[in-house]
Amino acid sequence: MKSDFVVYRSSNLVKHSVLLDELEGFDKIFELVNGVPQNGKFPKNAHYTMDPDHPHNTVFTDSLHNLDGLIVASQRLREFFETRKSKCLEYLPVGIMDHKGKLAKRDYSIVHPIAPVDCLDDAKSHVKFSRIVKTKIRSVKKLVLNPSKLDPERDLFRLNRFFSVVMVRRDVAEAIDKEGFTGMRWVEPAEFPED
Image 1 (cartoon, rainbow, N blue to C red):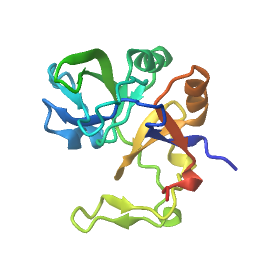
Image 2 (image 1 turned 30 degrees about the vertical axis):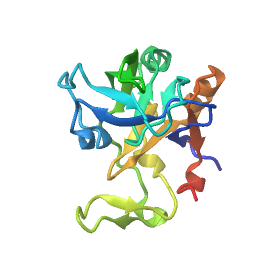
Image 3 (image 1 turned 135 degrees about the vertical axis):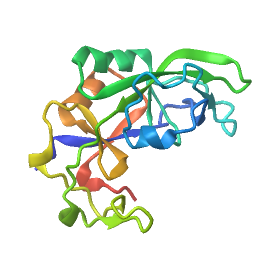
């Protein structure tokens, strides 16, 4: 039986798609990865620079691949979530600088899921916890969600304690595909972690 949710992953499968370097102008990436609400404190000058190791990657997709594991979304993808009135999402505008340091795009936003959901079935997922932060999950053998802890009104959310994973409702992922958005792919929970 298929899960009602899939894992969101940015993808660079579009030929010459933009790859992003680190986020600049904001040094609390951990807050974004952990789903901490920004409540208007996210800086207006925050921006990404295109990865200097890939100077020929200049094609903009709707979701830009980045090392932070964030959803850096085009205006069109942002509007998709806004139109759906998706719960517990913030939209944090970021500029995209080209390889020469000039502003290439200013209409991208980080789609930031806040209020991570504690819905991982620890026993069935065979979780391993961090040695440093004992409550944080370092890895799983497989990804098994507890259906009783899922909110059917959440389109997109991070897993509490295993923050690197963003889940998307399957019907929302299918709607994204139908609209022809680019730069993302879906991983079945049963196929996670990927080899």
